[in-house]
Length: 215
Image 1 (tube, one colour):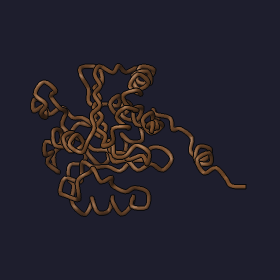
Image 2 (tube, helix red, strand yellow; image 1 turned 60 degrees about the vertical axis):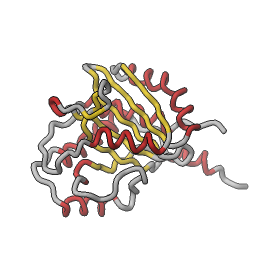
Image 3 (tube, helix red, strand yellow; image 1 turned 90 degrees about the vertical axis):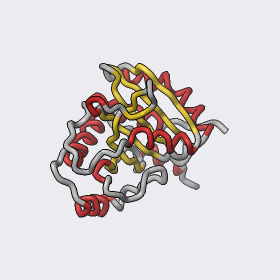
Image 4 (cartoon, helix red, strand yellow; image 1 turned 180 degrees about the horizontal axis):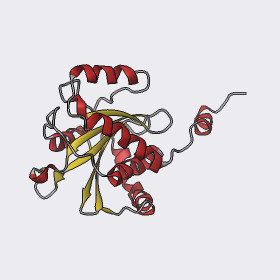
C-alpha cells in the first residue's frame, strides 16, 4: 500500500490562524525594522538563524545593504516566504508616494503549483489595496478567480478590499519591486505599518497558497 503524500501533508499541516500569524509577523518586523541601527553583521546572523527553514525566492534581490527590509517568515506547510517593507505606490502616478513616506508590505512566495508570486498590500484611507504579480498565466487566472474569496475573508476580518489588480510575467514581477522599493535607507527610522495591513497580507497569502491553477 502506498501512502498518499498529499493527504499526509494536509493532515500534518493545518491552516494557521491568520490573526495569530499576522501578530507573529508584526512582532518579528518590529524587532527588525524599528531598530535604530542595523548592520551587515545583523543581516548575516538573521540569515544564519533561518537558513534551515527559509530560502529566498528567485524574485527577491540578492544580498545588499538594504537587507534590513527583508524578513523571512513562516506561513503554512513549510512554505518559504519573504516579507518586505516598501514605500506605498501612488497609483495615479504608478510611482512610489513621497509625501509622508507611506509604507506598504510585499510578500514573495513560490508555491510549487503556482510559481513565483509577489503580493503588494497597502492601505487606501481605511481600506486595503492589493496588487498581485505572478510569473505564470495559469496562476493569474486562478488568482483572479480567487479575488472574491480574498475580499470575503478580508471582510470577515473587518477589512474592505477597495482595489485589486493581478498581473503576470517576469516584467510584472520586476515592476512591482522597482516601483515600490524606493531605496529605503538601511538606517531609516520607521513607524511600523498597521496591524490591519499585516492581517490583510496573511489572509491573502493563506488563501492564495490553497489555490491550484487549471491545466
